[in-house]
Amino acid sequence: MKADIHPTYKPVVFQDISSDFSFLTQSTMTGKDTIKWEDGQEYPLIKVEISSHSHPFFTGKQKIVDTAGRVDKFRRRYAK
Image (cartoon, rainbow, N blue to C red; front, side):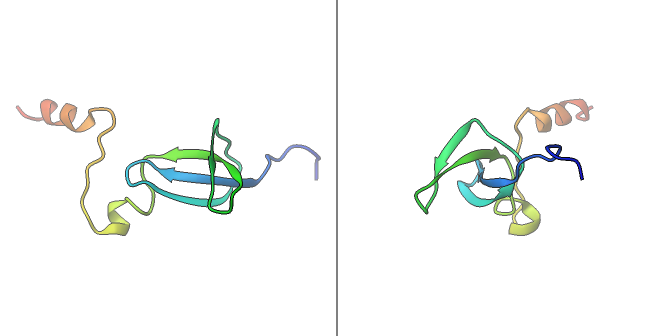
């Protein structure tokens, strides 16, 4: 196996910005922001729009997340 071709695998905190839910896991992603976790250590922070805590399939609630005006654009286009 070649040396130094794989990304580093380290602890990262993912934060769901729609429901303020965070979880610590291992990932190769990196972030500019950091957060102090429950164990007192700082970890890189990755912000996501939808996680298992806010996704309609896992919660059973229908919720529209419109970040770029896609729903309004769709309604205008097909309102004819």
